[in-house]
Image (cartoon, rainbow, N blue to C red; front, side):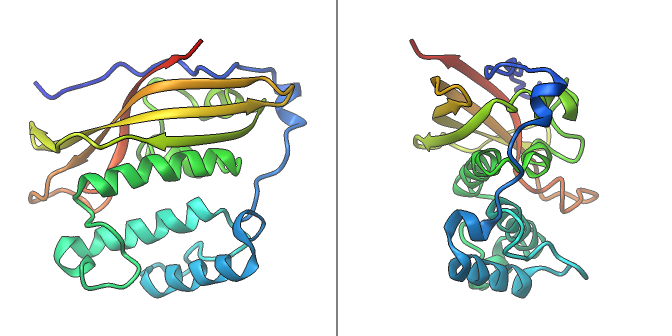
Length: 213
């Protein structure tokens, strides 16, 4: 049987739609890291993406462009991706899985909830709706993640899994600071006949997080 983690409930407080409506708008990559570095990232994104209209624009979040780069490199496969400047770690590696977790929290910090949602897979976070997922972070004003050493990549039932230890620090709209620790599990379908490029990418698969007191 393939490993399956229970999804932890959202640890950041849920809020009403009225509160969600007052939250700040998403932050662009240019706002996050500056116009010149954001334009450089957009140039790399456009050079790698096979999409007709890729989201490679400094007005989008850095996480969105980084995810388009990772998606494009995964299409190449490990062999070709190793030859492409800008691709980073091999798409099947534990390091590539760790990069998904970094992008997830970078997207959340930029309030780009759509990109964060898609990092759970094309259908989003299992057992949750996008609206509840979004509302769960509506009072969060900043969130950062520190990663530990990824575990070994393990296989089961045609898929690969890896566990990534994390420490998460969040600040809410009222100034409250929260710290969580635990692990994320990531999954990708192995390179077998019939597996789509999207299935062969690493996605968040489950989490075990607890609040630190």
